[in-house]
Amino acid sequence: MHHLETGGKRFLLDCGLYQGRRQESLERNSNFPFASSDIDAVILSHAHMDHSGNLPTLVRNGFSGPIYTTPATIDLCLAMLADSAHIQQQDAEFCNRRRSRRKAKGLDDRECAPLYTLDDAQHTYPLFKPVNLGERKQVSDTLAYRTFDAGHMLGSTSMIVEADGVKLGFSGDVGRVGLPIIRDPQPLDAVDYLVMESTYGDRLHRPIGPAADELADIVTRTAARGGKIIIPCFAVGRTQQIVLMLHQLMEARRVPSIPMFVDSPLAINATEAFRKHPECYDEEARKFLMQDEDPFGFSRLKYVREASESKKLNDLHGPVVIIASSGMCEAGRVLHHLRNNIEDPRNTVLITGFQAEYTLGRKILEGRREVPIFGEPMSLRAEVASLDELSGHADQHELIEWMRPIAKGLKKVFLVHGEPGPGATLAALITKEYGIPAYMPARGESVEL
Image (cartoon, rainbow, N blue to C red; front, side, top):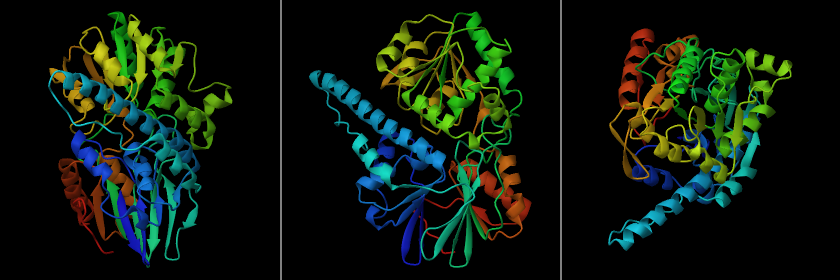
């Protein structure tokens, strides 16, 4: 969430949910460092919750201006914000039921409340205003912006914001060349300053090419021991990529013919948004469409919408693949699947994306002997595998190369969206490679351009 001021008006680039320690997250997400009613407009790079997820709180606190973004992002946000509100309300109810039991034992916890409700999400929807990819949008008398394909997820953008004769580049989240379904990231035109993500600023991904082979190996070996493959998956983007890869592997008979379930109402709704926007697809995904095939549906795959059907999955014996959100294992149905399967060594938990510090997904990825699920310690006996090749975030080398076309004219680079270690490493490399000052600004820091 980046706060811009120009011409006496105030704007936000993104308005995401902070993810991390629960109490710190609640405090940050509940309290904006400005009056929400003072914001004139929001420019949204893409639909992921860490970029769009706190828009309902902004609206509830008094924001009533336009939210500019791509048509695909709007369709995804309509599904994602409703799902976010639903999950928060469900988790608050679950927390309070447990609190009642603890209170009966003479223990007492603070009552849980959702950050925002479904009503808050629905009040946000009318504020979305579509801006097509590449279109130059005049947001106010003094500020305009133009978008470029970020290659991170459906509808994702990088952008150039222009005001007072200054051009500010904003990377959003930069994707990777060769990711399934979506097109490759575009470079920006020349800018004076750049705000760039630094998620993987200190590491390199493995090549994307072997990811299908690794996925086939993981499914095959887990199936051979009669286990379940539990895939905590980001419902938007990663789920559709995994489904497409499994579709291709099954067609090629490279994985056994076992039942597969996508257990996420959000993923189902998001998949409908994917079907609605083939203009965002890469060549391979378009070929599926031209062959009259549904990239996101095949005979062994079932989408699970109802909670009652989700609970029945607990009674299934392996082998089976269950894809459920959330991707960082912080909420949603995947928590129930992990609770029921993480202590069985026949099973596999497959991590397919970045796991923020302090999240359950990070603890599982680190292979801790015990992990907390719904506040209860559980032994991690299942195999833990990862496919970081599918990360939607560019690695260190890819970020350096993405900014190369605009490096010559840059005055300064501000690194955001990353932990301190990766940010500092990337900043040093940018300065060494291009001779440009680069650093990670502190939260709340102001800079005049």
